[in-house]
Image (tube, rainbow, N blue to C red):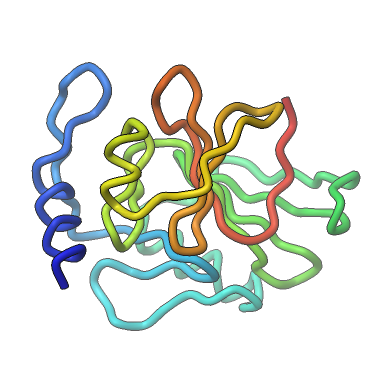
Length: 165
């Protein structure tokens, strides 16, 4: 409960890189391990749901359609179809949702973790396992994974991903 209170406090009082205040949104999605949580509903969009149901639901919640659709044939898990909205990518294997990737402060986890936070802020929200990789400093926070570059979180993800650098 204490962690939730801290997360709510941070979510309401956070700032984007450069000091611009973050305004909490009542529409949109929270990021979670294995699913997406609509901010306006207790229902969830779980991994393994079919693309034909996921895309309209996410588009409604984000008030926009995907801006791109890319097939990445050489991913380790198999060919991944990546649908991207502004700052959020959903990854599908075959017809099923298998992962998400966020790279903007617009999206946050249920605990309040978001892109733009530094390591200390991530640790305060339960992030552990910091290790240097070829991508940068990676960490884990309750089943959500993240990447820190130049001192700030640049990417959060859960499930199947296919990063290209």
